Image (cartoon, rainbow, N blue to C red):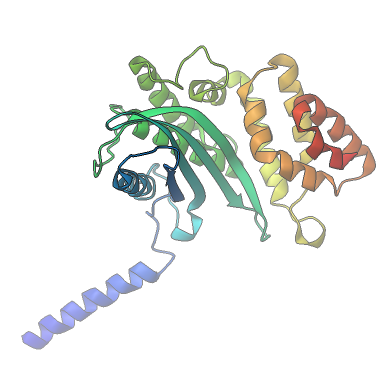
Length: 304
């Protein structure tokens, strides 16, 4: 009887190990693989343990949570980074900060990595007590920090899904809309409806049916990258058409936040890729990009 129990235990442990290390069974992993950094160097005299605890709490909150119902394996987790810069201690346990968020994804059939998001949020004020667990309920927003972090988690996921399938990130953008609606009721900075650049503006743009052409362009752009070009480099045939879509958007809505969001993430990449196209396409793209991003003339000068 004892030998049977030992054998049964061995079998159970063996099956557990096989499942843990088999990539084909790992279908319910968390979606994000975030590097998190809290920089408190601008705040003098504060308890540094609070910021160390905050950094760990944010890391656990992002990486330890399933944000969607999508099935994916560990090697499909989205690499991203959240850098929280504490700029001022407003009071005990209350802080003013800036949040820098980046994400990227691999290009298929290539070792190339394409940037997806590169945003600096300068309007984040929040309360935090050391070792306080970060809790989040999409239908019951309680704190600005968790609301903002969750908002950007959904933005990262929505952009990635939109790049993989047409309008694939819709559910994530809808969740951003829910967060923004609840956050606005608290009067927290960064969520005001009247702004054309803040979180609510980004949310409204991605949920605006009239701007579907932008999301179509985002999908086409990345599908184009996934097609190998010369030497195994990402494809370039969708780059110039994407610039024309942005130009059309600017003509209709000159201050639309999507134009800036795209440029902050993609302009450097576009310049690098456009350097490989023929002279006519390069000239066409340069002229259009100069109208879209006139303050980036130094970078764009490489296309002349």
